[in-house]
Length: 358
Image 1: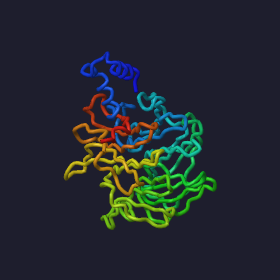
Image 2: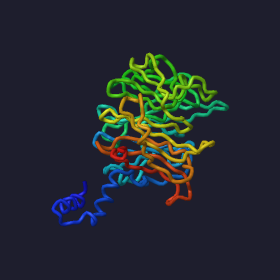
Image 3: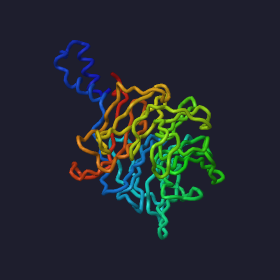
Image 4: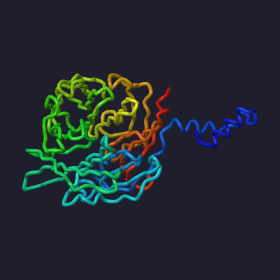
């Protein structure tokens, strides 16, 4: 609690300050239970901005994005050292060369190393495909390793991912590409099938504290690139390392930009979802919902809307959520509406966990 609030509490306790004269305390208490106003991280132009977000081992927050999507030539990184309240001037990731970029994701591994993924567009005549690549940082995003290309066969225009990798151990990462879900073995630079071999699609894959896998797959097996929906499952759950899956039947409509899943340190699962317009595909708001039983049920009586501009969100937003500290979540997204104050931009919202209380 702020020092000013503590002083007011003490004065109230001593009877020096009447209860009716404590509006500052009431306002402060209310603010601690509400999401912050959107904080502008940077100004962008248009296209596949698609920001990625992670918390480094030293507590810094890193945001990586395209300034001008649809094949931007560089990924820009902005850093916050105060929990997302302020952000540094963006700088390009220097190791990315000769690449028309489709943005990917950021992942902080258990040892503190950060993995940045993206895909490079390739065109040859009528053929189009994307090449998945990554680089890593061992100093909280200050310097980056040379680029590594993931050795996948039969690349397509849908060989790309937008969610963090799932770290099974130091050498094995589950990569949820749009056209396949595979395990990348870092030590041997090779690729293996994941679990029962099904394609989950470009969806979040997380592991809970008790080892359960949760997949954001809306269908039992994702068609590529798109197709008529078949067996709808609205999320999948596995307790045997992905060898078998059970339908959750409780995740919302996936949409174009999908949703995000985040596992908190206390085991709580956070769903970052998009609220759509009735009868149309426009995104109108972003909402956070908690699960305290590893995704079996969701507290739908106490969701928190973190962004609602009162109009369609331009560019689809692609919100990503991480845990800042024991009391606060942070969500990164973009909005390309040219009429908003400052124009198109990437934004960050801080949400206290107290906001989910009744």
